Image (cartoon, rainbow, N blue to C red; front, side):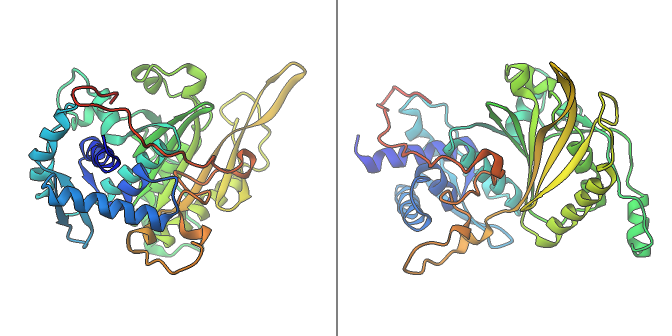
Length: 361
């Protein structure tokens, strides 16, 4: 099989897996080992080839977001390789604002490129709803039960904002991540906010932060993950709105202040948050050691902007800036805390080992 045919096949696999895809998704999935400009150009060639063969169709959302979906012809081509494929073009025609879904797909794809196992919100809902009917049934939703922690009304908060804060419920809620990745040391939970969110959302996020270091039982069960590997190790919050990121940072700094003097014991108050710079926070808890109890860092909270600049990036001759947000920097799928070092460079996925009527997918 020629290289361009392998790229075509892998791109179609991406469409079959995620249904709605952008050029940067193909670049991330097929060419992550390359700098962004050559990866983007190769992805464009792959997309154009699929368009010419009528394997995919092009769509434009209400927010002028260009994306693509696979046709029935593309699905038939994939089935030549024993892949259970179905077209998504008909559904794409009815989409108006797929931005959130598209960014979830992108984050999951970047996890794949780093060699991580990852699942989107849709994947998790399907597993949670197995044998229980429609995957959109809200009774079947949720991986982790948390207690929202609203910010206390302060004199510095304006009247309208105080009213909004007072309306935030503290009743327990069951949360579902936008995506998760399984790593050797535990679970990375992704929250992807493609728009400004309110106080209730931030209160639930703080409730989620208080769960860092704990096991997620339902996740361990549905994906058969060992107990230690099913602990919530990281919460990575990605946003497109700088003002919203600042709001989250401000709220977490309040948590840092209120927990800094806590004497950690194995009790309900066994929780402290430390700010370590670069929009990264550590969660500490007390635990047993051979010589008694000690405080441990049990996980991290990472705040970062989604690389929205990639969708309309214009290459200027010379070296690409590391701040661009591509794989060559320490950005994708999340910015690794300094204590872990930067990501290992991605490896090429080609050549594939696929033949007709024989597939490893």
